[in-house]
Length: 156
Image (cartoon, rainbow, N blue to C red; front, side, top):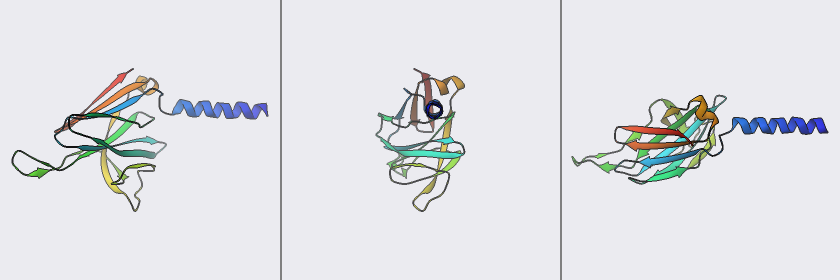
């Protein structure tokens, strides 16, 4: 019985070690003229876990409760339609590298790399954390702006 306890304890400690670093925080900021909707994802052993949509009003920031693990944090964002100075309407999208399948409604699921009947493909980009940032609590702040995204990763 004692050997079983030691084995179970070792597995639990191992799982805690590979999970998200405790104390890490993600913030999403809109430096944009319209409301934006943001999705996040990470890959673990070939499978993607994804969640979204965080809603961010213009010139505001919101926290994202998204515990991730690994070296890459994937992100995507879409804006509401807005009127440009020329009078035409437009809509923005941020993300251009990896196609993941997400819902148009709030979502939180595994295997976002696989198409489902209630999902559509959405392009995600990513930010890569350094080895030190992967093992230390960090603050990650996304700033979505016209023409691009700025991402700050700071060790807490």
